[in-house]
Length: 165
Image 1: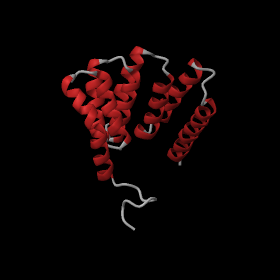
Image 2: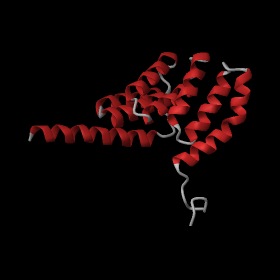
Image 3: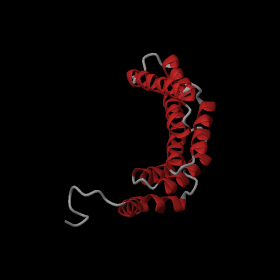
Image 4: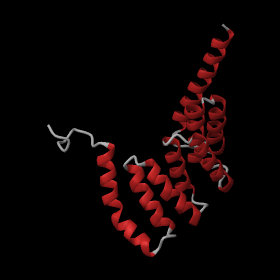
């Protein structure tokens, strides 16, 4: 079976070529309007969906220079930074989002996930997720947030028990 047969995953290189092809018309439009935040974001989304996080981050960053208060773009930028290994940069972008909307549920969720998985800061994660539940009592994924809080609290207990031994 060759790589183009159904069932085989495309390589990152294949995904890069697909993203380049898909981004071509958007990049052509950008030539005439290089500061268009929406177009820059669209190009970023093309590369992000193809797991080309470094390339996507570049476009999200440029989009934010034109429209700094766009929390959705900032979240995508933070995700790309996280996946390229820039944990602190990702958290800095999410914290910047909180300056525009301190109660934004998605931002608080992402801060919790990155603090827990990226920084091994279970207490910081719990704090972020508890804010989600406090500010958004009808949060659609409340049960999931409660489970993550319980898991993070358990990991704090386990870590503490291991240190006492």
